[in-house]
Image (tube, rainbow, N blue to C red; front, side, top):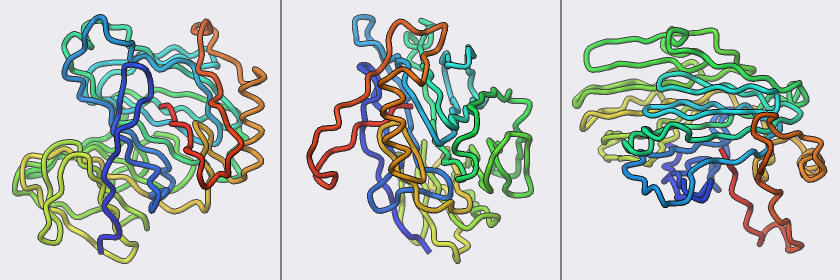
Length: 305
């Protein structure tokens, strides 16, 4: 059974980059461990005099950022000293743990000039026992991510396990995350391995229950159902989900199982206890103002990727 349809909202993450924000959603904060999802691009044009789309150094706690590109490339730098160019079909998996900062820079002029950049970035909340782990980073090449092909279907397992596929991407809780290409007329049952499942439409149209859904929509299904979707056109979709972790709090770029930990992260970033990337430390995103209105009426600052 279809639980909810989430329509992505526009959200700025830098002066020159606006994304489709899917999660968190007021009526559905998480799908399995996934607490955040952005769809950036496709960036069809970019004027040379436009504001930079670079995402300046900013902090995270209590989550893993998962960056997956369809087109283009982007340079990641973090406070561990890592510098990594991520290419299409690869995965950058950064575990923030007790605190990390990173930046994402568009340093290849051809990417913006060609208008070919498109990326999904998700955040996976960490189980409570791993929230204060040391931060870490790993880039997984395309060869590390298994693919499966059948009539009308191509899929790549980004992380977790589903459809009998698994890989060596380090996850800290049961989950699945897949990139799937469907030919028009193809039917696809959703994975059964985990209790919470969502499907986000990157391109094309799909049908479920005699209704058609399109780009920028996420369908989330109840635990008991065994849904099958139909591709009305050639379609690109992302399947994600997993087992629930319990309540999480999110403020700006911080995720935690307690409000007190969020407050500590604010102090840590403002005081410099979360250091900047050593090879990108000349600018950063300051802590947003947390004005003293009641939380119920105060707009939350926009998270960065």
